[in-house]
Image 1 (cartoon, rainbow, N blue to C red):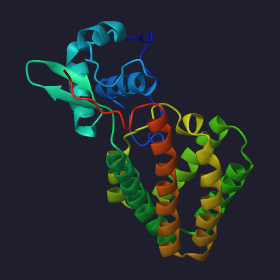
Image 2 (image 1 turned 180 degrees about the vertical axis):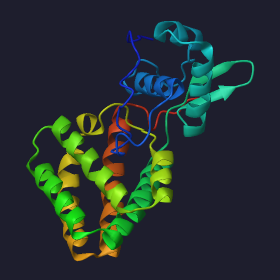
Image 3 (image 1 turned 90 degrees about the horizontal axis):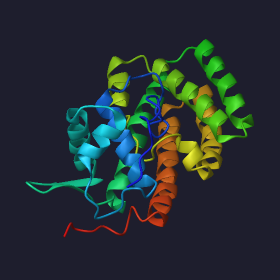
Image 4 (image 1 turned 60 degrees about the vertical axis):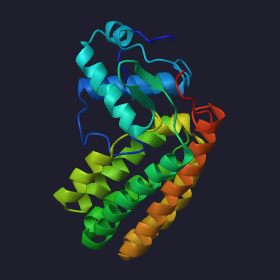
Length: 240
């Protein structure tokens, strides 16, 4: 296994989740790091996760590494075996699609409430960000604007419950900047955002929710293809 010399960006995207809604702990950072090692092929399906080595490499205690392994076991990336350690098992297609379906439902509900509760001033501000999003060419610029767009929608929902649920859902399958790793998603996003913005201006919460869910379902298609190509989906292996 090859390791980087430092922890990943502590504010890395969570599948387009609004940045700034949560501050990750060291456990979350280690979780992101291990997830990226699997994503980049440095840890492969069937390989034992070297927890002590990771702790030493990142300069953390074994506690956050252990907690990260437990979290990744729940997500399906890793399988923990009593008295044997933790092994990479990759992801399955059903769980990956369900992840994006749940994201779509949560963000869709929040967007619906935003359409129903927003003020004209908020809609105008959101429309200004939307125009910049449509003009954005590079993935990093698009990511930054998309985070702003989503932050505004969550705020417009005017619900602590929506904000809290979004924070709970801010777990990334794709490590790092989503639109850098999955650039084809930008075209999908732009197309659906046009419909979302149109429905927002009309106060049509149902249409906003429907388009948001459709966006995440199409993202799921792209992510399944990418993870299959990388061998993370479709090559599950039980530890010997």
